[in-house]
Structures are given as C-alpha cells and as structure tokens.
Length: 252
Image 1: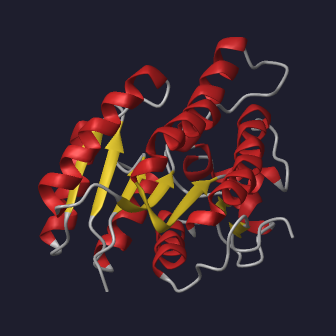
Image 2: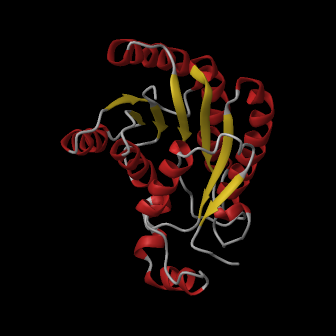
C-alpha cells in the first residue's frame, strides 16, 4: 500500500498533538502546523521521531488568509523534498481557540476572532489545499459536542462549529466525484488548555461534566487522538458527510 501523508492544522498541542502522535505510531508521516508555539511544535516532532516516526512542522496563522497561498507553496516543497510527491492524503482541520464568555459579554472583536479561526480560515485554507489532496483522500473537520448540547459560556464558539458541520456536508457533496471522504469529528469536553483550561483546571466544572457523561469522566487528549487515527486509517471510505461524536456519552 502506498505511504499515506497527513497534514494536521493545529498539531502542536492538545488534541492535534495527540492525533499527530497516534497517526505517526500507525506509520503515517505527519506535517503539523503551529501559530506561535514553535517550541511546542518542536517537542511534538522530537517525540514522534524518537518513536521512529516521520514528522515536520510549518508555521501557519489561520486568521491570515492572505498567507495561505505561500503556505501551500511551502507545503508543496516539503512534499516534493521529503516524499517525492506533490499531494497529501489526510487533512485534519483542528486549529482552534476558545473564548469562555456568555453571549451577552462576547465582544465583536472576540466574535470575529472565533469566526476567522474556526470558519473563515478553515473554509479558505481547505479551498487552497484541495488541488493538493490526493483523489481517494480524507478530510476531517474538528467540531465540538457543543453543537448538540449546550453549556454556558460557549455560545460564540459553538456557532462557528455548527457552521463547520454544514461546511463538511457540502464539501463531501462536492468532493464525492474524487472519492474524497469528508467527515466531522465532534469531541466532548476534554482536559486541555483550551479556553483557558477551564475543563481541566476548574474542579467544579470537571465534576459536573463527568457526572453527565455515560463513561463517568471528562475526556483526555488521547481519547480524541486515537479516534482521529482510527477514522483516517480505517477502511471506511464509504462514510462521508457524517458527524462522529467522541464524548464518552456526554449529555445523552
């Protein structure tokens, strides 16, 4: 089987880091992006290489759509130099930032940041990369369990993720002729530094979520990393346009 190559947008920490490490353990070379955390990205690369995997990184600001053309050129150079090809197989749109605020207190600037990172950036970066995704490849857009259930303080974020789920379905429709499967992965609450680490660090919130989750705990990054790897490397090409929630049964 030809070697598969994965690009993980937002792969320097949290869910993206775990996804990169699990894909690499499965023998998939990974290219990760980071915005400001080069040291964190370097740590991911070092860990993967220490474990015998292949990894490299590129800087990318999802709010700067004007830079996407240059990013595509840099990516093509890496693919040619390291793999002797001009296409990749898996795209994981995972970059994200969280704002823990009520709708009443969310500013227009904060709303615009959420939109630029989670929706506009995802839309136009994917558009730029479409010619570089091999026929028969896969795109996985990371959404959130918060599009199905509601928690105070996440209204603005959840609105953007709801739009990403619609984007997934339309993209799946348009790319079906190329046999590219496009799906949404919707994590539940996970213990990361996302949104200031509120789920990880606030004991009251952590316990509240665990009590409403069938498996009795809050998720960990590896719960999602394993799911990403499973969805990309499994023989499930016929599945497209779907939303797969990985939440341990939160708020059933």
